[in-house]
Figure 1 (spheres, rainbow, N blue to C red):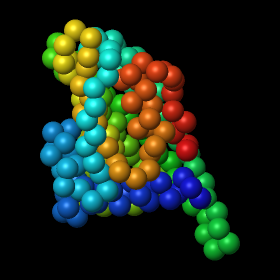
Figure 2 (figure 1 turned 60 degrees about the horizontal axis):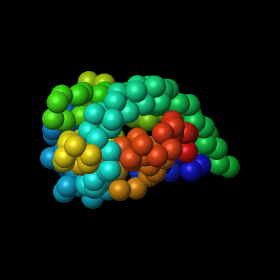
Figure 3 (figure 1 turned 135 degrees about the horizontal axis):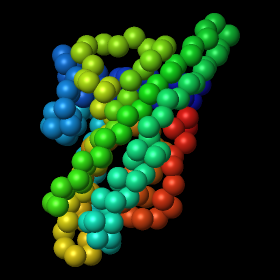
Length: 170
């Protein structure tokens, strides 16, 4: 039931981010929509880690941990629901910026509202940029409710602490 609740929060978040008209179709549109969205926020912080290390961790962990299809079920006395969700990470790295985009698509169990971007709805965008030789700035565009394990994993990847894969079923 908790998983269903998180999925519903994500759907509501996507609708709020989009202003109930259209969904952000690119990472740039997502970045622009998040600051004024009801259920999303921008979090900015610096890590004591060189930019190239953060970028390398995003490149390694994003595809290895987030390229997944998750099947969840929920059942109450009056309903039974099966939701199949595919997560798709994209990592782009230049000398001045590393981007981690996380998208999701419901393969089963959720009806889409509005035009879905190629690759799925945007759930999270993390931008890393060098501050100096030993520090990196992270701008995290993320939901303000739900998806805590994903958000914490991306923060851990940035800091280099507890670099593991999140359990996307939680």
